Length: 295
Image 1 (cartoon, rainbow, N blue to C red):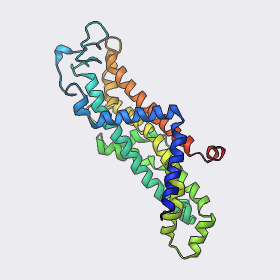
Image 2: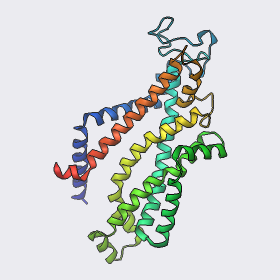
Image 3: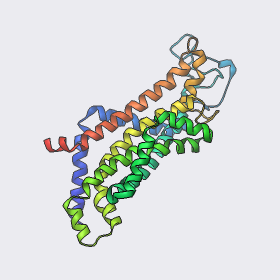
Image 4: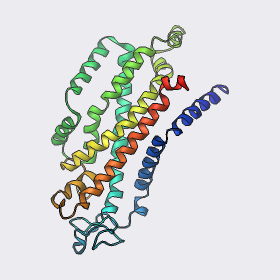
């Protein structure tokens, strides 16, 4: 054990050194960390109560436009609510849903992928059939149909996105498991009498963890976009809770006269998704075995 720990630490350090050489990926990490800190400390970073309305400030422009006020740097919406405060609190919902959906999807997809790839046979056929059926439906259309059937709400939107979110994880893990179970040390563990669960968890799972981690990171961005789309359609978290997609929808009728109502929440979505994608691509490049061999 004493020798394996330094070796594990050296591998982590090796991948970290490869990752930090990618400046774009590091920028993505900084963006993601910034959003997470903003969400955690929302009560301290937001200048105002996100649901406090004042019709005297209705459609007040940002500070850099005529009639703006530094106390409301991004302006106010049609009810006189501070847009910056609502964006800060809205990050909590988007990040929570993104992490919750991806964590549940990764756990379910990894489990079924391991079982299907390791045991094969009828179980593999059934899992592949279910995966093929779910892949026949576009993710957003599938989520809209489920939300329309179950109704809006935080819990329902997490369930709706998890119903199909596990599919890509299952496909990746199944394919890697089919390869890993034929490797010599897995065959040796089986010959020594190790149980199937021990082989899957101790021998195969560590080998499929890296692609799952990269896929999970990239999928957070996808979930955030779909959640914003559902909220835009009125199928997500309901008012008065500040949600980025709903904020974009609320400013739709004022695009010509008060463009900031929709623009700034839209930019928040754009920057968050871009940061997550840059982070995920950096992880993929750092863990790419072909690049590792070249290094």
